[in-house]
Length: 77
Image (cartoon, rainbow, N blue to C red; front, side, top):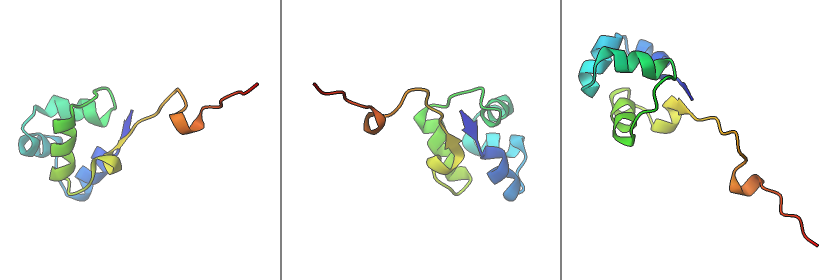
């Protein structure tokens, strides 16, 4: 998973500590989120996006190894 949290955070002139305080988590959680080393709960993703005045989809980029249902090929007879 990749994130754009740092990009949005710096645009708003927030430190990791500032964002952590707004969201209600420890600074280390923000560090791990920014590094893509922590998959947030839906609530944390929502709270982070809200604090940064954006949408969850703008902050988190999920890479999928498997193709989605629309990409699967069905072989017929």
